[in-house]
Length: 85
Image (cartoon, rainbow, N blue to C red; front, top):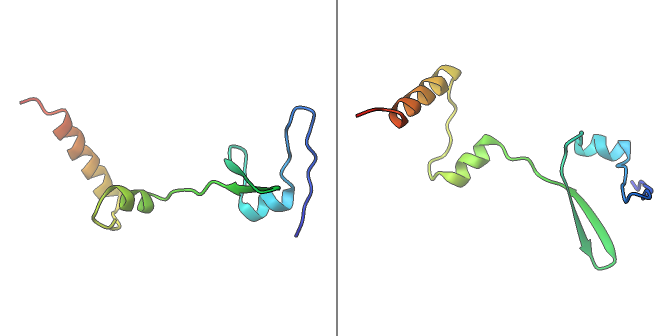
C-alpha cells in the first residue's frame, strides 16, 4: 500500500495514519532515514526488550523472576554497593 506525505516549508513530514497504525508509531517514536540510490527508506527504530539487553550484556540466559525476587535482588545489590566495612 502506498501513502503520500507533503514536505512542509519547515522540512517536516507527517506520517500517514495507516502507516502509524501498522508500525505502532506514537509521539516520541524514533525513525531512521536512509538513502538507497535515488530512494529514501524510513524505518522505525526497533525496541529492545529486557531479555535482549540481558542476552547482549551477560553470557547467562535470562530466566523469569517474580517481583519479590527482583526486589530482593535490588536490595541485596544496593546493600553490597553501599556497605561500610
